Image (cartoon, rainbow, N blue to C red; front, side, top):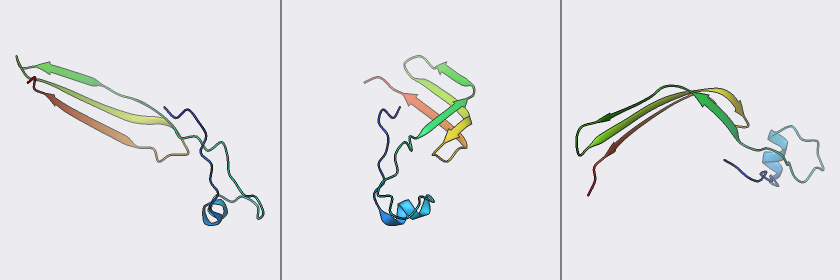
Length: 76
């Protein structure tokens, strides 16, 4: 979770965001994403796996899309 707003001072970035000339910074461009999807976990004895998939339903100031996570846990 992003706790503070980004500050853009680059003239190229400011122009690309469509901010009027003479404006030095762009504020309040906070990255926000929210996704939903299934989660599956399986225990193979000493080793277990986790798998989850999310599809973004809200995306603000970020590229939305699908995310796939896979984890294998082996205790030492």
